[in-house]
Image (cartoon, rainbow, N blue to C red):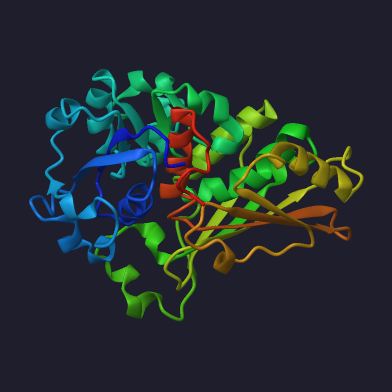
Length: 350
């Protein structure tokens, strides 16, 4: 793919975990001219001084972290901006960049929700740019490829929601499961909490320990229920229990739901999933009885999905695994970038 025309790209917030993985992908992406990387904390320092792992990457030696000035970014000539910033902060950059004609791919939660009122309910603050919500496309490439291709601002999904929505949307949409019976348990690596110093995330606190958190209403429920409601064409509410596990990165999700009366065999489940994901290069269906493993998706854009039927309880058990920093964040946003560029969606990701 060396003949792909390069687009000028900025990564805003490039020193967090998702930002670092974006750099890992974009520095080697044949369609990217990475011109700007920002970090308030590291402004003025060279990229390889702060992140020596990139020393041999093409173009890395010439890059310096800059202070994330909105006005300088808007007039820098960049065509795309990846925002790897906390929610609430990302919108401060998204609005002026969008108005300047820059295409924005936001990894925060600021533009994932269709309603500002839901944002306020789940994020405990007034939405900073409600007028832009109608412009944003929820960036789940396997479900919204055409919309993403035509978008000017893409809201990249959260890591947990990606692991839930890809197994669930086809089955909810087809009516094969009872949408009001969905219960989800997810386990995430510690990097999912971000790159910040906090006592509950210290090695001595997390190692050899597993704990639930974020109950009863994790923030990611808002986007999951929004997208499942769209798929089901009726309101959907689910139970979601996230857990912190002592690994660096990866998510393993188990979903339990009752089968609908119209689902009489597992061949129907398999047929629906195969039909939706037959041409999806990053969804690997492990089949009835398959068990995903985070080891097999680490530092990839793949999500592995398996399923099991419990005839005793008449419940379907769906399982998935992904890398929370790749398919759940950085790599999935690059997949959307590829769609927006009208190039092969696997470019730079395989």
